[in-house]
Amino acid sequence: MSSKSVALSVLACASGAAALSAGRGFLSMDAEMQPQRVAKTLMRVEDEWSAQALCSISSDAAEECSTAASSFQKSCSTIASSVVRASSGQRENVAEYMNDVCTEMENQDRHRARCVEFGQLIAGAMKEDSYENREHFDVSSLCTRLWTRVTKEEAARMEQQHAEEAKAAATEKSAEEAADAEEAKRHVEEQAKVEAASKQAEAEAKVAEEAEAKAKTEEEAAKALEQKAKEQKVADEKKAKEQTAKDEDARVAAEATATIAEAEQIAVAAKRVAVPANATVAVANATVAVVPANATTVAVANKTF
Image 1 (cartoon, one colour):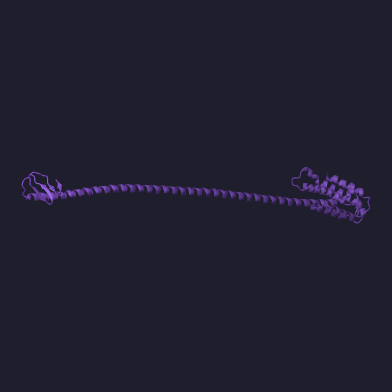
Image 2 (cartoon, helix red, strand yellow):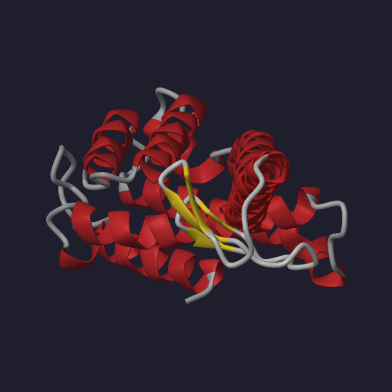
């Protein structure tokens, strides 16, 4: 429903109630002018007034916004005039009725404030003379003042809304930046963890490799030592055998030398004794067969040469 239609509806209802007696219930007695119903209608009208005001102050106002002020003026004038005439021009009745209407706007602070403002402007513009109010009420200047206030209030509200939106955008941006920073930090930390784990794995692998190399070196050294010990043992055994052989050869040679010396002594002694041919001579418990001078076989110390 347009503001003009709403205003005409209010006007028609107000005109129908004008014949009722004066007093607090002069308008509320009519069903169409019940404060609760009028409050709902007036809130819709106020929304259109706000839209018209915003349209007129918008920097990118479209062509249809050029008639916003005149549309508001017509709507405001119609409603204000209807209320004044329906009250028979009595200011007290208008003040009380508008208070009843505004009171019905529960939980609607902005609408209620504008309703109170509108009622105060209407009552403030009325004079003590009810006839003068009915016939010569200056509704034009009243609506001009209201339009000025509405545009100013809507401009402030729009500015506040823009400020809140900018603040919300800044807060959202700050939150996004904080989230991005946190994500970047988390990524860096994760990357650092990955790099640390990689370095740790490399270090452990290096330690394991060095340990394996050391173990291998120690094993090879042990094998080499064992091989050397075996070779040394073989060499020692060989040397011992060779020494034993040398000792045996030396012993045999010594015995042979001694025997030869003893034989030579016996031979010398035999030459000193004259013995007949084929005679037997006992020498040092040995039996020596006397043989011809050219014989070379001599028995000494139970041995035969």
